[in-house]
Image (tube, rainbow, N blue to C red):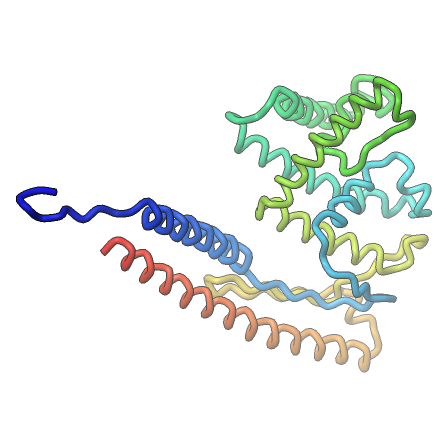
Length: 285
């Protein structure tokens, strides 16, 4: 109280409410930023496949599916021909590379194990260069050690639950599970995971026991700056006239529908950003 007047003060509840609203607004801004990054380009691919999976994207299952490619028995158990091994391995390699970049970006907050992963991955790249020059072989013990995945394993490896070693493995599994959950909350990592999962589904949709792979007959990419790139596989023009025209018609209709949805989503985000800006302005005034 001053000069007989009551000085107004903000209550604790009001301050907490403001902080909560500000946090929600920050999260909304972050989500919008992620969405904008996801829609900077429209890509439409047209393929003819033997079957289409109705399974929806599940981040944890997708992670397990991509990680399993690194298992030494994966191709033997699946009966996948050697001609397709590299295509599957590239999917795992791209996801692992994304994880490596995330570690690099967070280098100041990494634990010793994560720091070791960065060093191991960098050393592996050096050894791979030597391998291309024929200077090393994959059975080299040092290379075998470097080739161990740096991605956290999505499942524990346990033999005897009473053994001391497996107690350590259980602890490692708990740490891995926690780190995987953090990765699956990372929009950048999940974008790459989703893309790799889609490519794996495309490989799996054919006869995995055959070296024949599903062909992307037509691809159109639209960029925000107005660039439009359309590619056609040469095999498209070896098909019958009826089959070729059917694929082109389906692709063109997909491009039109995709562009309409893309522009609608972008307009929605612009309006959302304007609303956020108004909220921020009102909050400061």
